[in-house]
Image (cartoon, one colour):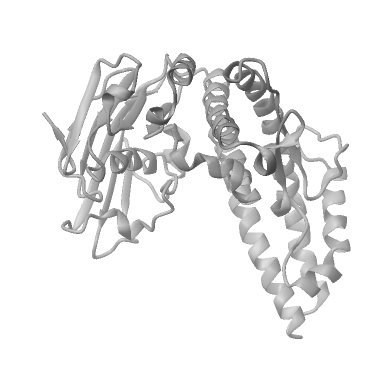
Length: 372
């Protein structure tokens, strides 16, 4: 997958960007607050995902603009495609997105067609942050391979919200325990699917990350990643797809937790309580890992994500490296570049000389514009 043209105006501080990137490594350099990260963010939201800054959509529009427009042309293994993304300040909820000239009702079609992987300075939160951060990472990785899985994740979130609302009504006497059953049946089906999905992906992730981490650590340390279900026991044998036995187990788990759920006021069991365990030489990376180990673990998780997608889909994603390479020493830069060498890469940095990899395409950003 390759981006062949990027045109952006009015997105944050970006002004009339018209960029024809190279097929492989592209460096975008400049001082802080010139728009480098904004450029990568504009590319990222064109995948149909939320901003990696967790920004509100209304904040996408620049202070001195009434609207923003993003136009991205890209090539996949089959054809050339074009994304147009527009939002007007007066009606930010009525954004207009088109793919190949067809107006989209939502961004799911973008997610199915345009794939990026973003490496960010805050990726260490994958290690240090909450279990939700790690669950979201796994869900996104799997959904990039099988986009329809995203509908199960959205449905699960909606069902949890509904069930928790019923629990609060039970506490106040406005509802009965029996009214939970309709939500528990649906949660058991959606949650079982998500459990299978996460278990399958973590098995792959562990295999790739073990090999990558061993290389980056010179064979001195072993990284292991495992799935810890909030529903099923550690020795549970997951089917490829949820079966009746699995969904019934999940359903009974929900039913047995009702007294505690009513006492707490929320659902405290199920896929919403899953965790991804990360260990180096048997010790938790989150609790006992050094800063260097945590950074290296986050790095190999992203590299594994790129490798898994490339090998399973026989097509490489677009790689976005936001101010990451400058933090790596020469050996780690070489290691990263060796993994993503055949992919199209966008690297932002304040000092392009700090990036040792040879890049034929180097662009300077100043005050939201590409300096020609």
